[in-house]
Length: 573
Figure 1 (tube, rainbow, N blue to C red):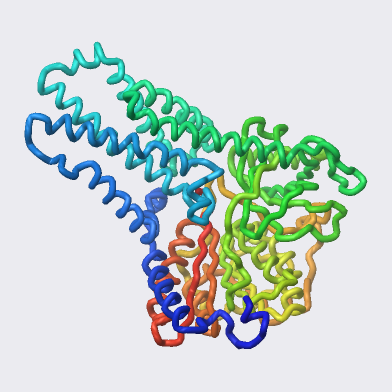
Figure 2 (figure 1 turned 30 degrees about the vertical axis):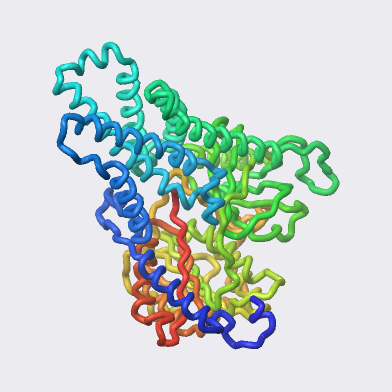
């Protein structure tokens, strides 16, 4: 950034000395290893898609440590073999208990140490639980076999209550592992969350009754992690939603408890949520948890913050806007509530409570080129990034942005398109080359967009089309004032000075993600960041494309090709 501000180099993101060149080479090798992902393209089985290679390597190292602890020096076929293996795996299981609960919390201490946020560690929480289930099964089976060989199994369970509690703890762990798989989570997401919280508390009590006192320090570690997380979230909830001296004259939405919130149904699937007078800052890519008691008394859902700045043309200071796509549960009731109020001609506000913002997104303005890819409501993540880069008054390295938005139906993205045209004008003003590509695969047009021939690299069919979003998704959308909903605005033939030129491209076929990424990467003279938000198929396609392109171009390996950074956001975690 210092190099960029001094204008001493044409491409400030290039390594400037030998040390930085070595660091860039090591970074490129690490990226090429960690990005690839195998995708299962079978319908109803795509949830079984394994983690990307980088996460797989982390798991292999983790499992190697676990296997070493569980077996080192213990595989000796003597009279104590069964008991020794069972006892060793008991320690391995209970020692993982604090890790399980540390990874589950929103106030993640591990995330703070690792420089990341809780939602990017959530996958590891599930794998630790699955690993614990395996080691707990080995522990229980070997102890049971030991007593069964001596014909004492029935007597053990009769006189030793800890055995019965052990079976109970194993059953609760099995229940959590099975219900944690994606198909079950998505089936009844709200019910899943409630039962998972209850199960996690009951599990601690059952484990307490099962393990001996000299091993209970692991349990109390887990209790402390759970208690701190709940206490922290309660403090944040009160701090961000209770105002002792609100100033109604300064902010129209000022109130003592909660935030005045306006709801508007846009079309048949979208609900715009405008939360007024929040007193915290946020960055593009962060999310918050939304609680509206009138719509869902016990439900607390995550949504991406749609805007990277104060909403224009409103008198509400520091407002946040979300756009929620209708699925089952809370989002469906939210849309029904807003639709009913509109049909009745009411414009009364509801009280909402928020906690956040959560997430530690990287800086977006330190890359020469940005490639933003999203499917349908995935634009809720990528659009604020574009806004933040174009509207910053600070020095930025970004000179070019390519924005791809794919959807099955045009009405899914009309709301985003209005904002994109405004940003095209803004990009021209600040000297950033912005190209917008819209792919509507369902055959319907997008209002306000000119129809142009598909650009090379965008017309071929691929597996990177829009995916169906799952319950619990972090959906949000474009920062546009709710009082002037784009859905109610008449279609315009030309929305910006750039609308009729080559800056906007529309196609009716699935986009070729590989070609879309390759173009700007080969054209740039500095580092590129590829950001993708969508379903598993789009994410996996983008991961493999970036890894392949980096290897093919021999990035930072003497060819002069510059780095390709990748940031991934999936619909749900």
